[in-house]
Length: 317
Image (cartoon, rainbow, N blue to C red):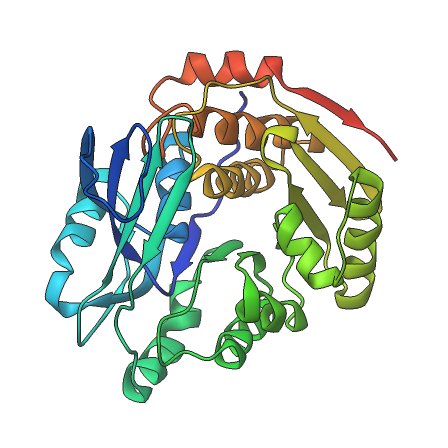
């Protein structure tokens, strides 16, 4: 893979978490479940994206809100992974999310409330936002919002980034996604269910997904719409051109972080000025590999190159 010398990338995680992941054969509600294994680690969509980007060779700056009471693991991760730590520390404790991963790959999420960000902290973050973006061309804003941050407030951040000339890759859901679309981010990555929610109707096949994505693009003037379809691959509307990628069937260990890995692949390929086919191969490959492991990251670059070669990519329209 050729390497261009790009600007740093910035990932913003408004609502990070400490993920407590437990692995078991089969979840049985209402009774005691014994875990086969478990671990606690810093996470959150933007943090996951940053970790994959770092493994790909990027210089990554990370920001968002951390609770003062349990901030240490996040700072330690930044130091260990050589991520540029620009988190804003606020009163309270960062949330803990429990992920129960069954043997067949099914994941049950128990997401707890975290910090509540007050107006003084919000103003500090907004004052620092453009400073965080200094020298950055691509910004990833991903995940849910903490208490105290309304979807409309986040929409103003996206608007400010766009006005500053930043190419924003935005990955969220629900009310945050709906508000964020109004700010016209440069790239969005809904999965097929989130796209169906936006369309207000079931989207039964690829043609229906493509029609909905084209309608979304036209309404909000979004350059790139990436529709992730799990094991069925990904559809990518790049400007007025459609691309499709299909990975080989994978032995699923956990789907946690697969979507974040895909976002990282797109951010890296686009930041490297790669052509669409190579970018899509990378994004699909890192996502496919993510489901075969616990946690995110690229441990073996030869394995990644082999996976990229096995991805079926086609320009379809």
